[in-house]
Image (cartoon, rainbow, N blue to C red):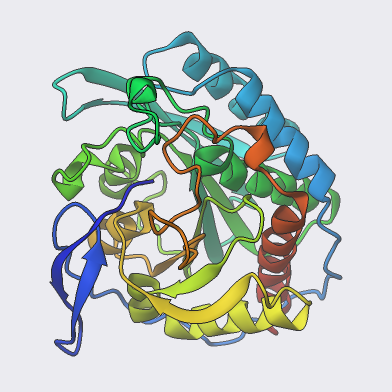
Length: 336
C-alpha cells in the first residue's frame, strides 16, 4: 500500500480535501448499496480464531517476499489456490500480465474463491496478496532496494479472509460470498501516477469473473494486523457506502473493539477499492490502518524491512476478523 499527502480531489458535493495518493483521484460515483432485507435461514455467528489467521499469515511470510516474477511469489500463489479449494470454494486462478512503471512485464494472478456460486445475492471480500518489491520507506537508505516481507501489508488481510473462508466451510450460509486476493497491488511508483498501483484489481475490474457481476457491496482489508491499529472512516469509503461503514464500525464497537474502529474521518487513498469503485462500479469500502500519530500516515513498518511477523498482533486480527465475520453472517441473516 502506498500513499503520500498531496493535491486535491473533487468530492460528490464539491468539497475540497487533501489526499493520500500519487495523483488527485476523483471519488467514484458508485451506486448506493441495496438495503432491502432478504429472508434466509438464520445462522449463528461463529467465533473467529485469531491463532488460525496468524498461522495463515506466517505461512505466506515463510515463502519470502511475494514479489511478482519470483519463485516465492509462485509458491505462495499455488498454496493460496490449493488452500482455498480445501475450504470448499470454487476457485478461479485469473492469470494476467501487466507492465510495471519500470517497463518490466509482470506475471500476476488474482485468486478468486466463490462460496455458493449459484447464489444470486452476493457480497465481495478482498485483499492483496503480493508484497512490495522495494523498501523505499525504510529509515535506513541502504535497505531501499530490498523487497518487503509484507506480513501486515498484504499478508494480514489475506490471513483474516482465509480464516473467514474456513468458517464459511464449517458453518455454511446461503449468501453468496466471493473472496478475492488481488495481485500486483504494491508494485507502484512512489509519487507516480495512480494507475501504476493496484494492477491486479484494475485488471479484474475490467475482466470480472462472472458476467453481470453485481455484488451488494465489497469490503477490502489492507494492513489489518499491526498492534494498536486504528481503522478510520476513509473518505472514498464514506462517499460510496456510508451506511455500510457506519454499520460495520458500530458492530465492531458493540463487540468491544472500539479502540480499533474509530470515528475519525481520513483522506481518500489510492487502494484496490478505488479502482473497483471507479471501473467496476461496485460500492467497496476499505478497512485500513491509518494511525494519526504515524510519521507516514500508515503503520510504522509500512514499506520497510520491519514488516515481518513481529509486526503482527493477534488482538488486532481478532478485532478485524470477528467484526467482518459478523458482518457476513448478519448480512446472511438479514439483520446487519
